[in-house]
Amino acid sequence: MALDIVYFAWVREAVGRDGERVDPPARVATIAALLDWLETRGGGYAEALADRSRLRAALDQTFVPLDTPLGDARELAIFPPVTGG
Amino acid sequence: MALDIVYFAWVREAVGRDGERVDPPARVATIAALLDWLETRGGGYAEALADRSRLRAALDQTFVPLDTPLGDARELAIFPPVTGG
Amino acid sequence: MSAVRVQTEPFDPGAELLALEALGGGAVASFTGLVRGDDGLIELTLEQYPAMTHRALSAIVEEAERRWPLLGATVIHRCGTMRVGDRIVFVGTAARHRAAALDACAFLIDWLKTKAPFWKREAFADGRRRWVEARADDDGAAARWG
Amino acid sequence: MSAVRVQTEPFDPGAELLALEALGGGAVASFTGLVRGDDGLIELTLEQYPAMTHRALSAIVEEAERRWPLLGATVIHRCGTMRVGDRIVFVGTAARHRAAALDACAFLIDWLKTKAPFWKREAFADGRRRWVEARADDDGAAARWG
Image (cartoon, rainbow over all chains, first blue to last red; front, side, top):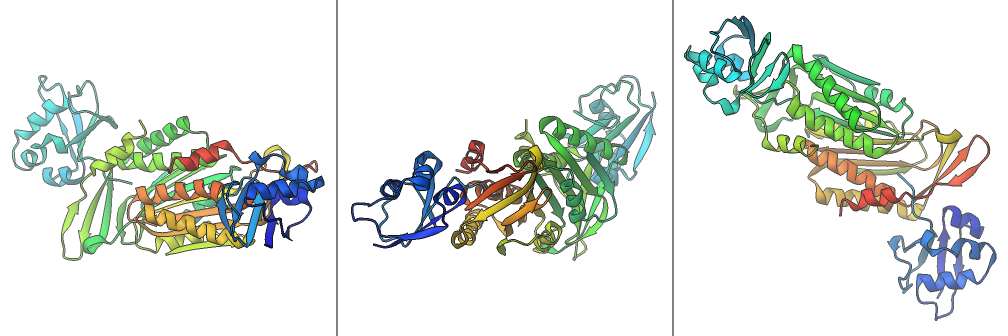
């Protein structure tokens, strides 16, 4: 199922784009599995997604852990730990 | 030895004056003893000084407990617990 | 940079914040206390012990500066008669990081409530006047700072 | 009365305090975060997740209103590029008594640091640029609120 991904901060810079629509295979059931799948693209993706301890995610604009199922979410955001305030 | 006393808030109102110079007998060695001595004047003094749990003191502009010796202090202040801020 | 003022005149928290912001830190915290119009209150009169107030406030600020790495602290306490909505007290702190600014600000106002020689008298619309009683939880709030 | 704003424009803490003071409480607390010029920093750029920021900030304010009896809360977070000394974030709270105002203000800024989707990038005089790393003690500061 098509999913919109948005990237922020250095994840965005490494990946080289603000976001994209993806249509992963059915076996990609969690955020972590999606990251594995994206990582196989190599290049900036491999660089940005290698260290999962540095990544956080939001599914449909809600913070969630990386092992969260994608379910029927419309938008996934991948980014470093937030540094606002 | 002469000592200046200043009164604040309802202590001042009950005593009926902002302050006064007193010359207590030598046996009056602590603030508490001075309050006993003042209380014998009766009237507003007896009213203001009866309940020691409602009184606080400062000796030469420093908060001190009521059992503090008068020593050679120049100014004693008698007042209710502070309510600033 | 620390400033302590006891005054009958009003003060402007925005102007005080500007001065603290100019000190180069990343964090400025403030507290403003105002006259509440509870129970028909119309006026609040602050009596002070003039010979002691400035010294007591300065000692409280120095204590805060010992405890936290502050770039600046401002304490303003009004005395005299104020009306509902008027500002009574201002505490502002500046520091490199937020924890010092926030904690020192809370410390200063907690201590002002229990360690500064001011007394409040309330006047009500029905003519009643009464001296405000000290609150046990003010002592508790100050005690948490050890 | 609560207000949440995410904006590129500057804001005026004094004006925000005035609005909070007008709510009739006895206590107004504030925190302002500013750009520090450490290590030759000349610019700070705040990136946000626009679809999420307003919702996240509103949720944080609602949580504060559940925890404390607030009369009002204001949260303003700037995004875009700022220079040394510029204000980044403002938190203001109003309550009847000081403990609610002070605690809610500290809670809000601690949570903004860890729960709001903003990322800071620093630019230095020597041309270096780097994304700010999250600080472990920010998580600790937020964790103390349970």
